[in-house]
Amino acid sequence: MFNPSSPIPQWYSDAETEQILKANKAALRFWGYDEGEFLRMRATQLLFPEELARQKKLARENRWGETGPWRCRRRNGSELFVKVRWQRMMTTTACATSLLSSRRATPETP
Image (cartoon, rainbow, N blue to C red; front, side, top):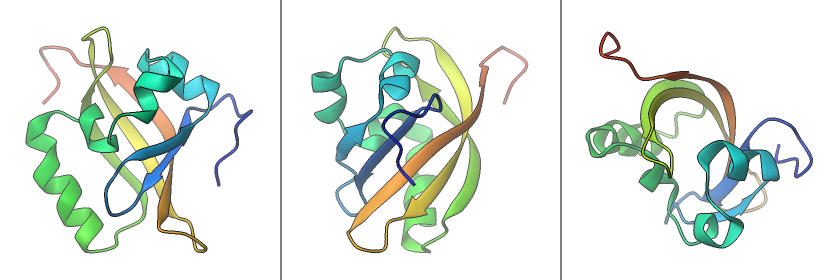
């Protein structure tokens, strides 16, 4: 569940449009965006384009829970792989996302 004061980067987005609706300060620091920029984004904009087909497939299949690694890019351009937990919020069409782990992308990583 989304916790605005959690030290773990968390954000939630509309499950259909993927528009980011809210993010905690840890997420803003982690991804490198200010709040206004982050809230104008879709969650899929954090992913590399080649990850989009896999993400859409999981969303279509309603596969929630722990997923990854996902190849992502921070605002400063640095690449990394992340694992996240997706959780459908029962009272809305939103999806809560919590970062579980991250590691820098290196030439050895797929």
